[in-house]
Image (tube, rainbow, N blue to C red; front, top):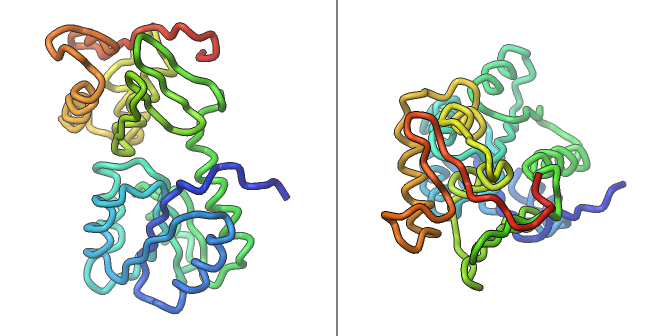
Amino acid sequence: MEKNKIGDRVKILLIDEDESIFYLIRRVLAKENYRIYTSKSGRQGMEMSTSICPDLILMDTALSDMDGIELIRWFREWTDCPILVLSEQSGYVDKVNVLYTGADDYIVKPFHEQELAARVYAALRRRIPSGQGACYEAGDLKIDFSKRQVILSGEEVHFSPVEYRILECLALNAGAVVTYQMLLEKIWGPYASSSSRILRVNMTNIRKKIEKVPMEPNYIITIPRVGYRMQESRTASVS
């Protein structure tokens, strides 16, 4: 079996009204050094997600306080982290609905411990760029893709999951223009609205964190009515 090399900084949010499953999942995933946060309701899960910014969400859609499908839609408004649904419903219609809504995988209860661990690992691994171990470097900015870490002038800068994914996408395509639609589809999926202002809001936040002079282009240049271009990396490891 392949050793889990993703690291122990991964935060997983578990949303399920059946508290008996908490112990099982904690026991299974603690072996991989993941940090597990648990919620007994959809509303509580929403509140926790905005504070901890999870790297992966495990959730049941059978929630008494809200519609699980709507909860998935809500998550997809601001995060692209993997969502794995755990459900007792085994019908194909249930699976199709949650997958089209934005979930990444569907696991039928009861499940085997090793299957859960493998599916979680696979979902997290897909988020790591194919150029694992590569870095982006320009000026005082460095992005380590394998660690998902951003360093500016020697200090680590923290980003929300969505902000990081946008910055990562631009850095991996450094020197090339990335259109608005390309970013929307990459981060929020193929059904993202081209008129969504969420991209502009996130770009404003990103620039505040890495641009020394807001009114002057530094690392990210806006191409009016088209998209953005990130300054080329001085390393040869980014393609």
